[in-house]
Length: 129
Image (cartoon, rainbow, N blue to C red; front, side, top):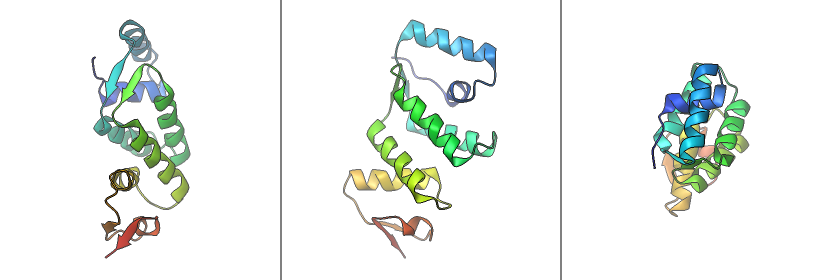
């Protein structure tokens, strides 16, 4: 199974380049399934928020759309979904990466997550040092 890079995910999420978007659509039709690493998902969120000025809600919607695409096999989708839920519910200035770290700690029952980040520490299963 092939993998796709962050720049391909950006095209899927933004459709900002119709030519490249058509290429990835055709590729997905041909291969039917591609793998996406979590690092690519983190990069995608960063690009959407920092370079495309997506508000949190739009970035969350883009992630949920990717999770629903049957052609995409995302690394640990259950943890990713939990991280999205935490990020959406937090309403704090908490990064998506922090929410993913917390979701991973919760999944592995390695809590509390110890942090110096006051915003992150407002979430359940965390401990502010």
